[in-house]
Length: 306
Picture: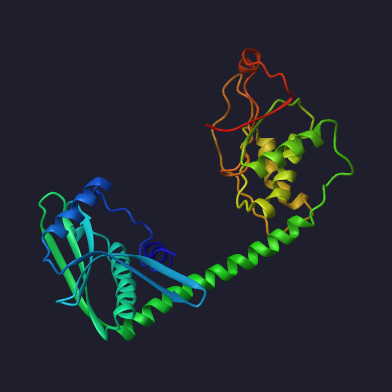
C-alpha cells in the first residue's frame, strides 16, 4: 500500500473538507520539486525508495529527499497564495506522511532518531518555508503501527462483509417460478457481458422483465467477477421504487444495500435506461428515433467500448 494512500485513509483529522484553493497543477508541482532539489547539496538524495511491513500489510513509497549530513528527511509540498490559510487538516496529513517515511527510513538505516522537515514552496514567489522537528525512532514506530492497525481493522471488517455477501449471492435463487419468454436470453447475455467486461445494448419490449432479468445475473456474477457496485438508472418514479425494493425481494439478503439518486425527468422521446454495474457493463434502451435510424439485426448485441 502506498504511504500517501495509507495516510489519506487513516490520518484524517478535523474538517472533512480538504479543499485548499487555488492549488498548483500537476506540472507546477513537478517543477516545484525539481526547483527545490536543485537548491540542495551534492549529498542530498532525491526520490528515496522506502518500504516496510506490519503484519500482513506492506507499506511503500518514495520520500522526496534525504540529507545524510543533517540526518534530515524532507517532504516537499507546493502551494499558491497564503500558507497561513492552509487548513489544519492538510497540515496533519502532511505530517502523517513524513512520519511514516521517517519510520521507514529509521528502520532501513537503523537510525535512533531523525529530523523530519516539511518544505512548502510557493509556486508564485519560489520561496521556501521550512517546518522541521526531531522524532525518535520509537515514536515514529508507534505512529506507523497505529496507522496500520486502523487500516487493518477496516480491511478485516470489509473482507468479512464481502465473504458474507458472496456466500449469500452464491446461494441466491431466481425469485420467480420460471423465466418469462426472452428473459432467460437477456439474463444470459448480461452475465456473459459482466464476465467478459463488455457492454450490452438490448432492445426489449415492455413486460419482458428487464429489471430482474438484468439485476439477477449481475448479482450472480458479482462474487466470481469481483464486482463491488451495481448502478441502475431510471426516470420513472415507479421504477425508482422498484429499484429501491429489489434487494429485499431477492431472498432478503441483508448484506446488500441500495441508494436512490434523483435525476432530471426524461425529455420527450427519450427512453428509460439502466446502467449495470459501475465500470463493468451497461444495459441501455435507445430512444425511438435512434431505433429507426440504427439497424439492429440481432435482439441482443454485445460490443466493446472504445
